[in-house]
Length: 219
Image 1 (cartoon, helix red, strand yellow):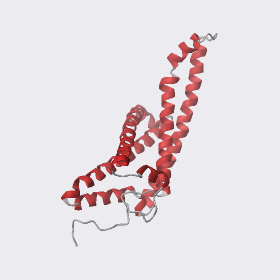
Image 2 (image 1 turned 60 degrees about the vertical axis):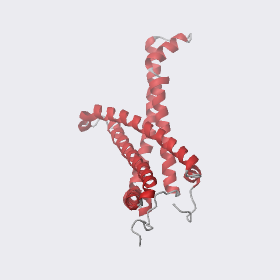
Image 3 (image 1 turned 90 degrees about the horizontal axis):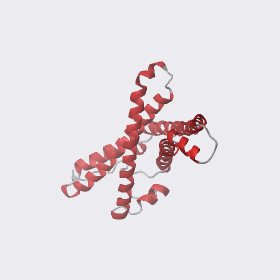
Image 4 (image 1 turned 90 degrees about the vertical axis):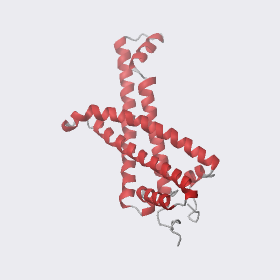
């Protein structure tokens, strides 16, 4: 047998089954909602600008009243941010369960190792294409890392009253904020990559991500 040809394995390099599609789109929705709450907090309901806007609207509102109103709105938005965060934690646990106990085709690590193996065994003519696939899958590994960091630091911020977590509260907050920008960057690169693949070499990719792929289709 030609050693440059990788034999078939159980773990596909791509998986469009319903469980993973649900996880993918649920995460996309939750992250979008989280970013919207941050947008409202930082831009739309910013305390300093809210006071000025309320006073300039012609309402008879004092500075303390305007600040209190802005604070109440900000707290409610933050509560929604926490609710969405808990749902994100639940999805993270769900994905971790698939990774640890699910079949090989549901495990990200199995698919990543399979792609790495195919890259190593690929003939020179196919090395570039295999390298692109390996690079794309590696960026997904970074995304899983970012989500894990967001979940961990978010939990630290929620349980800020726990005595042994107070010492790392500031570090967790800064890490949480930086990771948010990393996730935004990943999303932009991911969307651009999906659109490029759809237009150039993988027609129907988006529809498969939404509706799945027939079991007999080649991956």
